[in-house]
Length: 435
Image 1 (spheres, one colour):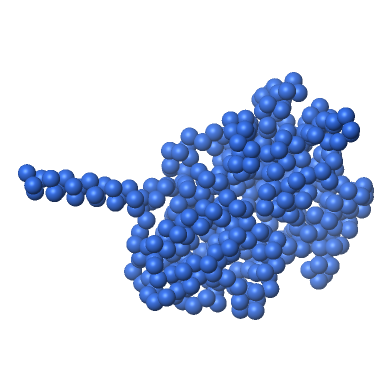
Image 2: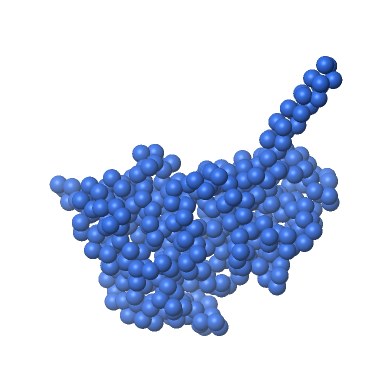
């Protein structure tokens, strides 16, 4: 009898231990893989730009450090703009953090300072096995010559977000009156926009993010151009910013500008206007819905998600991009191994990130999780990823997005004619890259 009880207790302990080790997403948290460096190691890290994602990183880092007590991780939340500037200065001079998060279009410019993934740090035998952890084509932008240089922690595409109570209060129906073209969005602006007795804006139909960073201008502009079968850069990197397709994209901003200076959107809280009810319609990935609900819990159950409008009304008007973890090639061999092990741990727990931030990590185990499958509108978000436009891979993304931002601002804030703004935008970009 005593022996039976001991066996039962041992079995129960094994079950509990297994549950504790099983990370969200159905992947067991491994102990240190063979070859994990010994001795004291310190990793510095530029982490996610938004607070919710960074808090998830902090939680997962703490868990990983319990498995690897010889490693100290010094992580800091890093907004995109300042992060780009720091990396642009530090990496070429041999400095910079051990591991860092980058916006996908930066990869081409920073890849000379990155070290490829180390399969052994994942407990795997080959680079091919790392590819197999991810959905097809999820690592195309992150790879060079068969080697993986970055791993995405978030891979969003944008959808249209609609505040259901405010939309239907204007006698509009869901889904019948949900706009599918940018012309339909512009037509709804008058119906949804309201001012108070003092002439102050209290609500607008749709708000484009003008104060949350240049990437918001550039991604929407690029996707709108390329959804027409055109390009913003040719294969040699020459800009095509004065094309008819570029003019059509610029008019999306021009025709949907309603009191653009009235906003509380900032880079670290880009969905503030939607959360506050200032914007009836907004845009973003699954993470945007989660972010907005954290800002305003009353939005829970009150957000309708649909295809992002396009010029034609067909799918394909959304940009597709990622935020990726990379490792500094100037780090020591021990630091590189430990950094890739940490990246593996964080990305393998993509369900934790999704459930806390809405950000989609494109590892297969995320989409196999029941809690992800049951998420409202998950099929809409997945469909956007299928049809969305990839951003151009260029060493000059920073210059390109700055030129696009300046061009859009000339049209929206200064009423510069579209052809003139496009010509100046092209010249600014060429000058910025030394051509």
